[in-house]
Image 1 (cartoon, rainbow, N blue to C red):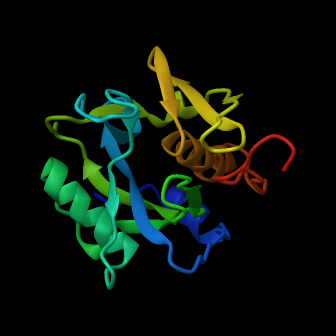
Image 2 (cartoon, helix red, strand yellow; image 1 turned 135 degrees about the vertical axis):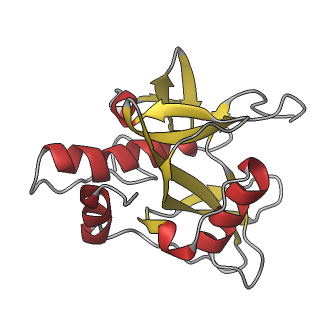
Length: 198
């Protein structure tokens, strides 16, 4: 099954912001698009309860990229390791804006690159939460964050909150892919690091 052409076309038109930071750790988040009986959807997971921060929250699958590993390869590797979803390189549809986190504890910046992938028809996988693309059309909320030093985006989703960076990534994905398909010719101004006043 081939991906919806409007998704690939929207990502090809999109001019993403790439961030280069000396000494930054690189990571990826996988925005995995699937086909379901209810229409296109994306796959989320839930952070394990043993984590010291944000345990049990909804999240996008992600992992650190090794030194010589591309972020698309890291995203595909994470899906294979975590969910047993093995995707070829051509499953990568495009990239969204880099998202920067400044770790105030270590002083090292972290650059997260969201990778959009097509996984075809969804057949059911343990540990996966399926979210229809239509459910991403939600009004974001911005809250103060002492850790981030700036307002942080949250999205209401399935009766709970999706937090940054996943909230920022999926909000941008909706604007770049879904909203532009609904309104052809419209240029999205939403950025992964977007916040009020920027």
